[in-house]
Amino acid sequence: MESLLRRLLLLFLAGLFLATGFAAPLTPAARAEIEGLLGRLEMSRCEFQRNGTWHNAADAKSHLLVKLNYLEERGMVASTEQFIERAATQSSLSGQPYQVRCANIAPVPSRAWLLSQLQLMRSAPAAKGAP
View 1: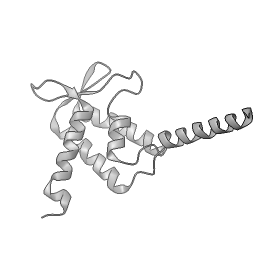
View 2: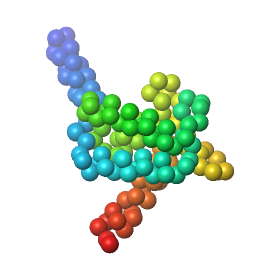
View 3: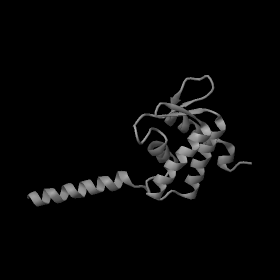
View 4: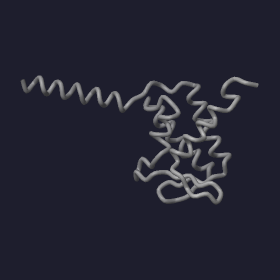
């Protein structure tokens, strides 16, 4: 009985690890969408806070691309939403949430800012194939 419970526990843990640890490979379309999202960040001239320090948008883009490459090499990101959740929401070192501050507007969590920009990108006429 104990060996059966041990096997079930190992199977459960292996399934949990596989379900949460890895994702399907990032498609070229998803990669392009993420790069477009980070391009929007860079062009926004907003500031990006990580670990208590504000950085310009170009530096933020570079930092997030490094994190994207890390996740992509390990097969841990398959969509833009996964990228936002796993790389662009909080510091993987400190756990502190990232913030975005644009002009004189109060900072917002990076997750909210990025998801709103993603929604705008996806709803744009060019995204739907219109001229």
